[in-house]
Picture 1 (cartoon, helix red, strand yellow):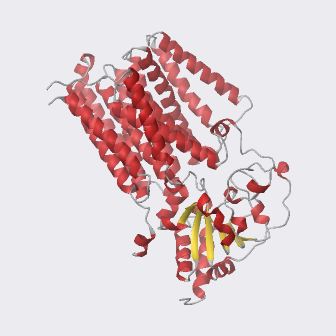
Picture 2: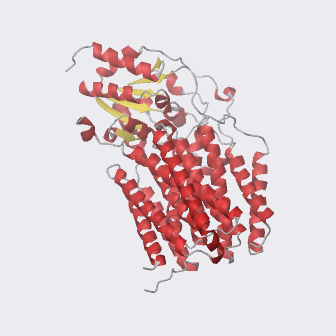
Picture 3: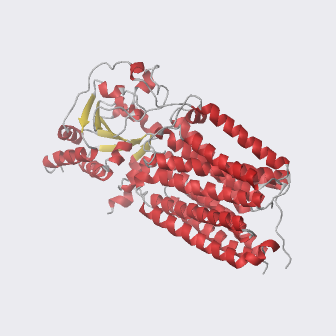
Length: 472
Length: 104
């Protein structure tokens, strides 16, 4: 049997399984099987790749047993480490984990480019250009994702910003492109310090590009780097004449780009604005004072009022997950449902630390996905709701985004919780949101504040409703 | 049997890139926001296929620097693929409709 034929057919099947798997992942009913299907494709492709050992370059033949051993060790280490860390990671920390795995993929693409370049294995302008470009994008995705991971994981709290930063970054990018053109111009026949400088600068550029971006914008950035890695993988696929890499890389490149645009749109920002503006540095004076005052209410009173409501809509935010209150919240929801209250969840597109992150966190608590609604599907229902309860969310429910033209978040789509007859806001204290913007909702006439840790508040509400005795 | 790998250059490669890009666009375009996080993680897993390219590069390495970089490449690629799979699977298995959860 011809090894090349076996490899090529495995890649063909793998490419099919990837696309079919992604397609199945696009509906909650079939999503689980989708990742399994794609996983089978991956295993198949990796196994088939060992057939490469039958047909390596003449120069590599004497090293084959060493290389094969190295490959097996690297596979085992990478797989073992990632498998364990992936099993262990908490759902709240999912965004930074995705960033980390994504950075690794970018690094692998950059490594392929590096080997191709320093070994002078790539010829022809197109191949060489794609190798260089893929290496650049991959290296940026690697170091950028690492910074994103460190920021979301709380390992870096500083946001590096200085006036000339964009100028420095712009110059750095120009230098990178110049070196890239220089390499291509010389047909790849340049000495290794040039390659070393190229990759080192690309890594530095990834760091410099990510450091000024605030934590709230990080999901968009992670998604962008995901698309970057996809592109880099696709380009290196061309260099290696590997259709599986080309197809999978490009599918992810375009899917990731679209996802990035959708996310940025949900925050009413352009991707360029996320990357190059210094959002999140607001002065308090600019916002003026809020009219009215914040009116507190006891958790138990709020709980009992919800028990006698006809319809309750819950708007959860990341604060809910930080307090680990999802399970208690679902217990409360079930109590309300048993009492005949109609309960729905309203999810803002950027609730949590990543679009859809809140859905994952609620799913983890066992909340069925058919009572969870996207913003555009439920925004019209708030005016029919007796109670809207906001838990650990802030900017995503700020009506100023709709009404106050001078607000920094004006124009951002928000959940219209203020239109409910009664609004409860569960909040730790009288602080501001992630973006530092004052929230007009907290001062509204129909809003009452329930101060306290979300989990403790949930427990008080549950106890209050239970103490009413058998409602059914 | 005579079979040799087709070299995918020029317009053939361009067609592949174009069609793959449209495929990615179409698949994501109709996904509900509820699945955005698992899908980002799922597509993250799919570019873990880069491990295959890294394997090829390592197996064809003929100098120490190439072997070192290749080793790192395979290590990172394997981490990308395995990690992406595990977290995506973990997230997706949690999504359940009402009927299923009520039986508990």
